[in-house]
Image 1 (tube, one colour):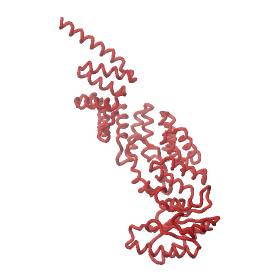
Image 2 (cartoon, rainbow, N blue to C red):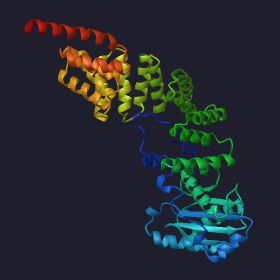
Image 3 (cartoon, rainbow, N blue to C red):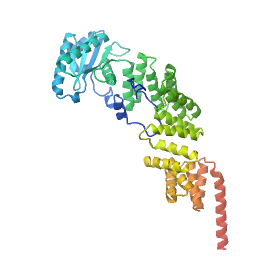
Image 4 (tube, rainbow, N blue to C red):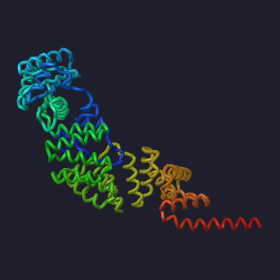
Length: 446
């Protein structure tokens, strides 16, 4: 996710709720120009073993080292990619020889260059010279990633992987781009690990990124997301708070800090962060949605309903949980008919959502319609979540309305057992009804 101006190449993370609109990771990243999990730096080795013995010997001797990965842009759109690749390879190899460097072919349309003794500026000059030569033989453009040794505690051999990360970073800027390995490159690499489910790998990249840039807001935010996904809310909040302190206008960090409070059921504290974030950007689905959820949890159904509807207007396909909360807000506001419609949509999207099944059954029962469906939905809800007192209570009321006193009593008792205190009165009243029934049966039998 880029920033509001769409110019930031770093992927910014939101801690997402189960709102049903979590984007497909691969599609989302391609839309935003990000690397996907397939571009993880783990995948294809481009290391020192692929170079000649002479190149490796020079690498060992060098106190400084530059690595460049050049990639022909849009190889798939080139009419004769083999001919173009051969021409560019010839150009790159010639320039490497002139510079005292070494070259090898990588993936199709990709060339890895090793320049012993080169610093960052010399590597940039090499890339610029390559572009000029390539422009003379065709219309193709070249993107490149540059990394140098020494950098931090990286070994010489790491320079190749770092150049690959820089090349992935360059992809954010489009064709004909060059990037030198930096904290943003590591942040993007960490995002690739994160998307692939490798949280430890992501954290390792983010920690290195902070060594290069200790005040990088996006890295702190990304680290917070990893901690949050792992359930370490203290560290997550600390990371988000650090990001927000560095940039008080960073809507992502502010939202994420609020979401940590939501996870802790600290709804008023969450609202403070969400309201602040909304003053910065009021177009983000998750921000609007979570604001509505926090308002609902604090008993402000009307205000919650406004934010839930605003959130849903920002999505082409709101998920089942969004409709669930819409139904909850409508039901709390007393609009049972509209609530039923919202719950019905939620059940279509998520047929195993016990909350919505029970709530929809309750709405139908309250309106006096779809009696058979209401009972089935109520039964399904307690089958899916047998330890939910509210669901048992609602089902008991349905049995009571159908004069099935024994079944009603059983479910009122279970509801009370699972903490739904309002069922206590019904336990006593249905116990009395059962006693009356027994007395009548005994009198009839005598």
